[in-house]
Length: 560
Image 1 (cartoon, rainbow, N blue to C red):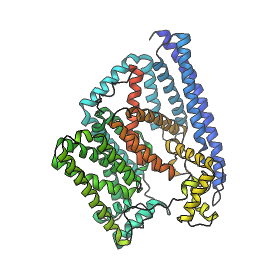
Image 2 (image 1 turned 90 degrees about the horizontal axis):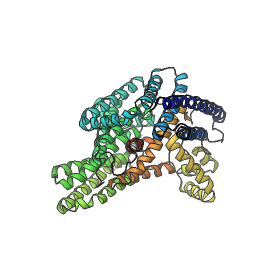
Image 3 (image 1 turned 45 degrees about the horizontal axis):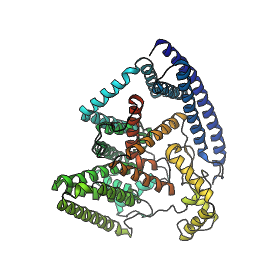
Image 4 (image 1 turned 30 degrees about the vertical axis):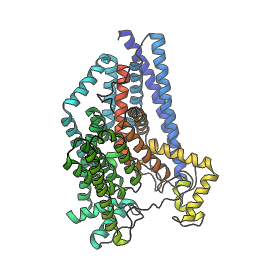
């Protein structure tokens, strides 16, 4: 790049920085005004019906869109008036400038300045690379990918070690509070009842965490610390299985490392993963299930009898424990297995004896695990599949933690119509109200979609019903991840096996559109989101620095 081009880009970056910074200030000020309104609505019990609490989502989406419009305009100006032809260079420069403006605002209001300082230094280093070492970026990228392929075990080991240290630090900072009326407190007390008195939990709650805690108490005695250390261990095993699954499934160690690395930068995962929620067991065990299922099918095609016996047992046991954590997984897990069988059927039919015996073994294991779980739970009259107490969620479009977020709280609603919360009459009324008010239904589903992808608050409650509001930096991160995930979602769909994971993700998303779309429920899809984001990031870099990604994706086999 010529010297005058560098001067022009530096000047435009400075101008864009101040424009972006003003957008951030305006958005944060608008969010503060919305929070004051929400506080007044939520100050009474039960809270009043008011505007959507997460209305700020539209503000930040608008600000993000404004960033993109300005970036596009700057790129056009740079090309038209100054002859700077590298659109990818200009776009990268101004996008990082926007990120720097966001992080500087975070830095200004932060008490613990180490993290935002590292972010700012990271942004500045990228800006320097774009301006003065842009021609080397492709070379650096190729060296990184080559290094990952050659030293995959080292990269994976570092990620697992660093993730474990993050979880341990989060545990050290954890106040070990169990709030009365919250699910973790119920799970903990129910596990004590099961451990001390043999009283099995009520089937109205998914009971997987209860059985996990009861097993921990039986092995190591009651208490939170050891149980949370076991959660960290399960998380590490799950992350390792997830990375190996991604490497096998896409035949790319690079995607595996990038996807596993996403866990390290997700504060949503790190800060929340030591709590006694079903989701914190669900997503690591889901990773184990995905890994074992794929290895089971592949072991049939290779003819290793002991391998597919072992993996069939692992698939069956994880499948039914996942159902105990989230009852809807019966459909989602079956969807994944059926799609995997379908897309691998050609290879499996080459070995008909192994194919039939594999299906028979897996069927026997699934049935056996089902009867084992049912027999264990039937001591207290429970059933294999936990029931749901959320029949009224679909009409009011919210969850028990966000009173006033959409219309009315579910308890308030059931009192208004004088019907029991779990009665068939209430469900019938819910259905007819949806049919009679389709616009309300569309509005609620739209808000839930925004909540799922962008605006679900942090794990610390701002009030009893409104989760901790997100900063602009968090919105910026989530929106960027959503765009990368969308790119990876549709790009992976081009490959034969790549059609499986999008279908599973859509099924999980559809379930939460009907029931809850809260911050913790997005963790159920954490492994799939990480894979799509990694896929999207690598596709983006290839598009930006090579201009064409077709038939050259991540050293993947075209047979996918």
